[in-house]
Length: 170
Image 1: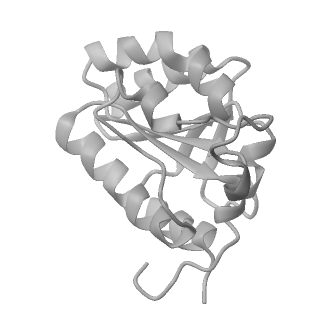
Image 2: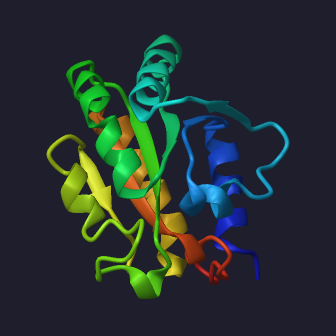
């Protein structure tokens, strides 16, 4: 059975979301592991700059763009630039790392206690899947909502979900 990471990478490839703007931390490394050929990662030194670059790229291309941010701190740092993306009706798909699933909820180091709630005021859709098998479906929903609403969306994914089996329905 393929991993959540592999199914997600294949979905992103099929949808043409192969240019990724990001400023990763340790929680994002499993998503970036084995990034397929044909993907391009544009590294920024601050999350505000990353979202600004992605915003411009999405506006120029007319297509949704993937943004890769680090947990709560990176998501928080991106909020100022996200207000511009909202005002511009830019379809950004923000995927942020999260602590391992057993540490979500308690205030563990690098955990975002309620990641979707942090971002909801600025995005058209925000979620953290209930289990690893739900990640590919949630990613597809994030892309769909970004395209439909012409607004950024936000998906928080626990560190350990990327290596988990995707399940039959992914």
